[in-house]
Length: 118
Image 1 (spheres, rainbow, N blue to C red):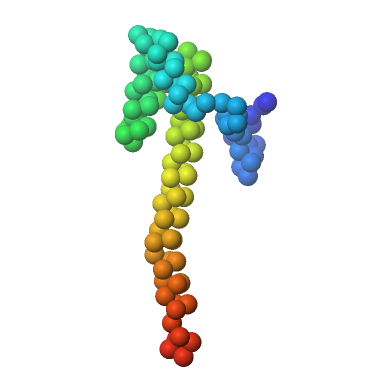
Image 2: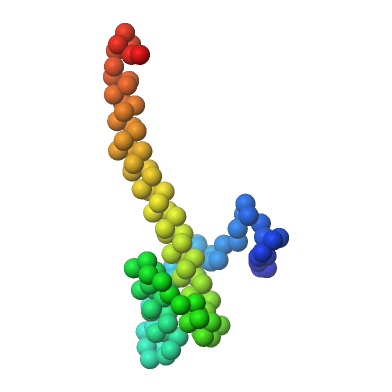
């Protein structure tokens, strides 16, 4: 599968970075990588990246460029999963707000007798 990036990228249908049906999520892959290579520089960088994402802290991009290709790809997958999780989290917060604030107002409007409605 080829991925087009830049000016010619398909904005409406962005490429999926993983096959969600057949893959474990990236954080599990990072954990397994770190368990297999606990003392490697790559494992330490991936651990710092995961911690920075979880704590919403900055992370020096230069550290990513120092990774070997497999670890670099894993770091990109981790960031893609994190971004997707944040997107869904924001959507759930919006839904919670709607359910907590808007729906009760609509129910109250429906319960008001027609003669008293403005």
